[in-house]
Image (cartoon, rainbow, N blue to C red; front, side, top):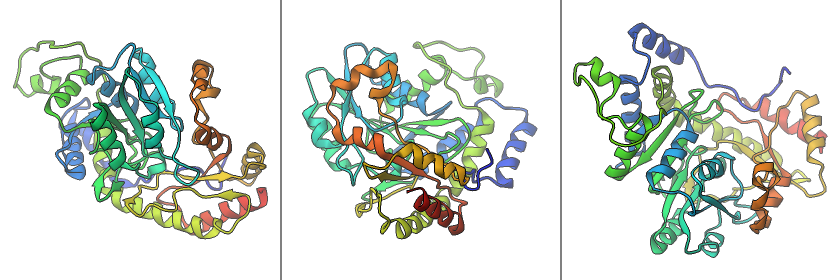
Length: 376
């Protein structure tokens, strides 16, 4: 399929290509000095004492967070009912039980602190939140609740690099924050992620989990800083490579400007779609935060046949998507139907994601809008 307007386009130019060429010319392509620079730059970007560990992908970061916090069999972790499957997958992989919490409303699709508190039990060990579409959650209430009830707070920041809540970066509120740098993310390296903490012990735990629990790295031995290594705890191979780290450095430099372009396109959509019948737009009120504008989601009216709209737009060359199908529809997770999440369930049935990317132009937004109007 050749799309007139795809869901996403890479924000790449010669800088990414040259960054990879420089790595290849260096003859050191595994985790090394570019990785260290990427981590250091990301820490400075986030501020607030962030300690960053670059990893293979965002799911690896989530898995590391769960392991570092000692979450395991019999533990309950409260998660948003509206999010990507990775959040519940990593919990089930360690034997923990995901407990679904509802969205705040049809205007704010983030996790509802009131429903989170309602679903806390003696077995609850942590709350995992997602800044959906790059719009920050109400962190004051969530941080206060977790502190009051003695629960860990995990931030899934896959959608929110560069987003801030009350001028503080998403990813600096929780015990652990997990970023994804997948192809369609705001900071894109293909595959990659970041495990971020502020606590020294959790930082060291992440370092061991990333690389087999080893006391020294291959780079240390290559530089003559070590001859051999010890294994201090069980670990995994969740390392990032130097090519992706080098691209990540460039993408981080572009992030602020790219997010501003996403904002411009979002505002263009708002102006065109606000008066249109057949849909509503979430997150119009975010006065206490600066979003990263990761995706552009809309909510179709209940009587609209979503698949018919998707197909009609496809015929016009416009790619759309769904963020996200309900967990309760998946074969592996049908038992989660016991959790009452009516707002999230309805959003999952009616949500439609329109194209959004930083190199998009107003003409493309207008083409999407006209295609949607005709489909409706």
